[in-house]
Length: 255
Image (cartoon, rainbow, N blue to C red; front, side, top):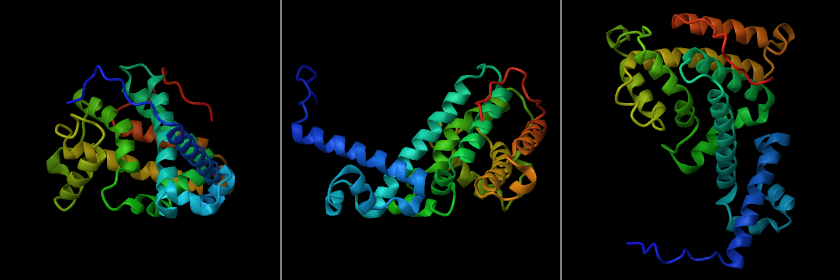
């Protein structure tokens, strides 16, 4: 048992220096990701940024896989904080505004952070998430903590969702497994949200992710420009599928 009358040990100078260099290395890796993509995040490149010899990086990271995992975590923390701030600006009782604002913030962030999108949601994600083995918390867990509470609130408010019996039998077990992952960071939600709500979330995500890929990879930009009109059309459709309209109280982040 800890004796609360005994002050915590003060970090030594060596420990403080180590912690500071680790922070600098992670910040440098984050900058390299933004500028050059995941290919630019190497042990040698980060070591050069912080002014140490390349082999010295192995005291802080388990090789390049560990480095990619660290920059993945930092980038994901940044994105989730951005989404949570967008939701916090909305009226607490306006679920349409909260859903709209979170989705729009995700759209804006991914449009302006294309290299980061590739690490979190694109071809480079497996290199980072897979570095620590299966089951490691990743994007799906964290995104659920932003969106699932809003869908759960809509369900509790009586918004009609498909019943469990309406979900195809072959799909239901898969949705149940997805629910376990999606609600991992939403305590108290996993036990109550039915599979029909999870099905709606999956349909919602299919559409949003498709648009995010078009934005991040410049697909059809010759026709749709910055995709703002496409996003507005998609959002109206998604809200309408829930029997909702865009809220006049919604406060969107500036693109």
